[in-house]
Length: 399
Image (cartoon, rainbow, N blue to C red; front, side, top):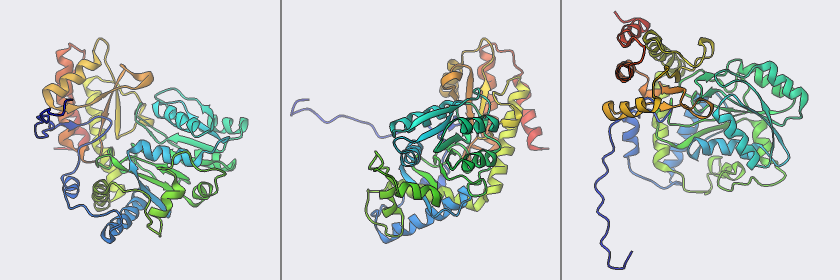
């Protein structure tokens, strides 16, 4: 660019007003957007310290934990994931990771980058881990850390029997890391009762909050390992022994927190507390159940069996002869409606349709069912699009 170049002529920002029913982000509650428009203060301002305290208490409520070390990591959900794995896994440690979805592979990648060795416990995509297989892996290997995905966004499967998994790990003195990105605030999650040592999450799914400050909680056993590592964590920014100074009692400078994102998370968590966490779990199951009933009445097949169905993320099989990408494009162009395609082994085979947080409401469900029925009719799919809405209303118990 020459010294005399004119400045670029960039128009005012006008993003489209989408209905977000993919795997995340979900629609943001207007109260959260208002919180983000409030005045900025410094990251060590006394008023922001009060906000930090509020967020930590609200996160404890939402995680169902009394863990002292419960914080929002400055970054997206993957930052919270890397903070958990990169601090718990030391060079030479062995981590047991699942193969039944896309995000187990990400766990493995992060653990390897932290210097760990990987052992895999296998299950088909679309099924949860079998505790028998997990126990067999512990019998065969000396495992230090066990990671599992509570709600696998790539397959639409929820992991049952979590206390059984954590018990197997703890009998071998291993620590347990749970990926709760697609479950926190939408699917039953009880960190303390289920004996989970570390759980990380993202704010943009069932919490209906923009990404940027991501939940993380560690119990005393996990934090003891972090603080007694033989060598420093490889990431300075995500080193929890350093972040402890900022989010602990000292509130000492480490980095400039994403203040507006923390405001947003506080308001999103306030909405969770006002609704009540168990009532929120029930709403997600009821509304997503109506969405599922509509899909099935239409003639579509779910990827997960009823036993392992994940309410917050519905993986729907693409009918024979249908172009999954063309349907996604049509919904975006004709309806301003976002759904997503499959990942990894399920690419091209499923649609991933969320029912999360502020988006988990009957109006959005009806919109998705009507729009998807239209898109499939246009492709000549063998479905009954007119059966979807009555089935939805029946499932909701509407008169």
